[in-house]
Image (cartoon, rainbow, N blue to C red; front, side, top):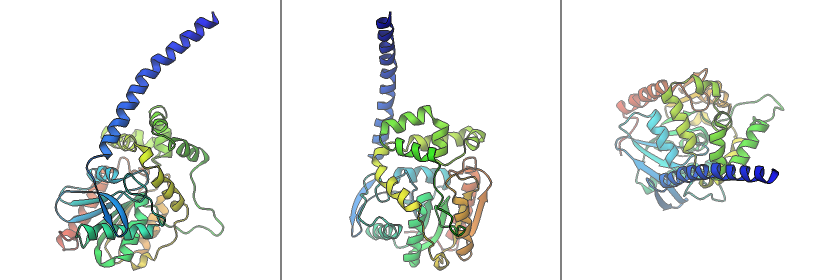
Length: 327
């Protein structure tokens, strides 16, 4: 009887494993195919850089956040930017086909952005930095002020003053465990996104599940697409690890020296805690505009149309005034 039961359980496990395996192979192959096309690799004085260059019109240097790459940038550009711009989207240090150098600081990354623009013969750009793309976006505008026509910071990882003796904001123990385990393999990440969707949205995308559930079907699909398209995580792991080390010790930059028109956007319930840093940064960049939402989480879920409108108005204003040059 016991042998029959064990045999039945074994057959059941095999029956379940076959469709799971096929589904995983289909999804990971699609992810591999997605990041294997649509970009180029160029050698620069700052090292090898992968990038995508799409569209025509005024040039935007769009810098992705943690877990990204050129593909994430193009997705978010499609979500938040109106057509009519040339989007230059590098993969940051350690992501996809851009290697991690010995100096992988935001300052070095800002210099690498300039090296890429030099190689493309692009002089001036609007800079858009999302999440962990914000530190190098600010560094580019600080180190290359004549090349930064305008600056947009979306849910930026940025400095905010803390009470004396307060420890840096860190993920919860559960979120840290989930991130550490899911980063170990494409299969683990894929499986976790299937069986623990809300936990992944909360821990990996830093968005409260209640915001996700209250959003429209279109906005929900945007979040799920971004989660799905984090695969292959194996090609982003080194960059993610570097970002984690950088994020916990973001220093205060001399943002008062940023002369470019600036827009900063964040949500109060962003689980990465970007709201305070966003507001502080906007308060100290001369003339910056801050747009804060009470809900939306790190991905500004449910705020897609509002954010598109804000960005369209900001870009249109400076495009009309000549602040955003065509190349």
